[in-house]
Image (cartoon, rainbow, N blue to C red):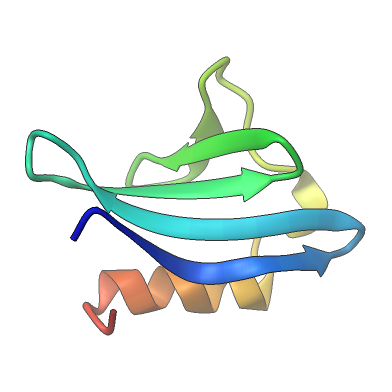
Length: 77
């Protein structure tokens, strides 16, 4: 698996959002959440951008994002 889209680009609360799962060179799975043009990385607890910012508060606990994340966690993809 190189890259698998778990949430196709969709608009949530005015943001363009997509999520993908990627197996990096280390063999570990990486979860990326792209909101507009910013990419956030899952650290096991929350999504963080490369400059240390978290996702907008209005998107935290969003059901669409949570379902995509749960599918990854449960190995349903």
